[in-house]
Amino acid sequence: MPANLPPQYHEAEQRYRLVKTSPEKILALTEMLAIMPKHKGTDKLRAGLRAKIARLSQEEEKRARVFNRYLVRKEGAGQAMLVGLPNVGKSSVFSSLCGVPSRVSDYPFTTISPLPGMMKFEDIQIQLVDMPPVTGDQPWLSDVLHSPDLLLIVVDLSLDPLSQLEEVEQRLQKLRVEKKKIMLGNKSDLPGAEISSGLLQKKCGEDFPLAFISAHSGRGIKEAGAKIYQALSIIRVYTKVPGGKPEFRDPAVLSYGSTVTDFAGSIHKDFAQKLKYALLWGSGKYDGQRVGKDHILKDQDIVELHI
Figure 1 (cartoon, rainbow, N blue to C red):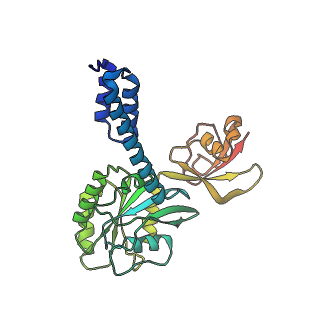
Figure 2: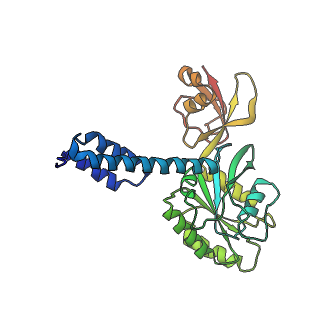
Figure 3: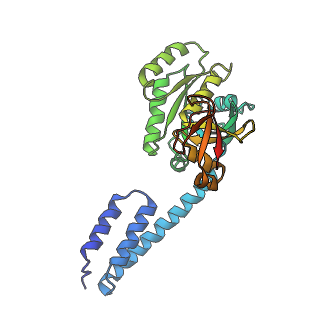
């Protein structure tokens, strides 16, 4: 008995062939199953679709379990993950930036799972995650590397940093990871590092920020922290109550381009609705300038809300 499938079924089947992820495939298969006429001619085809849905669902559950195992919950003002090849000094860079003892050993895979830490930048904390070296057999990396706000690509300046960068970029491309990046050239105090730094600057200085550091001596670590903060595209805004002094502890951390209304909402959702105006110290024309709800704030502004 012929299946006699309608045109809508073939359209859904075409979508199934084009999509890449398991959830998208499951959605298309479920749509095909719903459209398919119910009679003896479609029994075998219907059973085949159900089997595909079951298999993909099992794969998705397994992927979710693996992802949750390696997932690092975001904390602080932003999250940046350190990626690189084995033996580039990535764990030493992580330790230097976070101000914690190094876990460096003589073997190349010291880091076997994501390790979170906090980097202090002035009056805020930024979360860094030391990732295992990027190799060819890490299917879980694709999901995990999509979660941070920023990737920190670490290369060894004493070797061939351009080939290291190319290999890491190829692996990220294979994993379909597209993120804002900073290049950290480590071991800047070793012979040949100055030449390597110049080559990196020439090749990718216009594509994304570069920082040349030495995890061993501490050279450039403070400057690297500032570049990480800048690349996160965030600002700090301080609160001032009417008649009081500014509160410089625990600033509100907002996205670049945020307004007075966004700041008010970050303190309490009702404030954004009831807000009338604000007084501004910092980036205004003068201290105590009255500004409207849509005024765009700058880093380290002080805002006094009037409800």
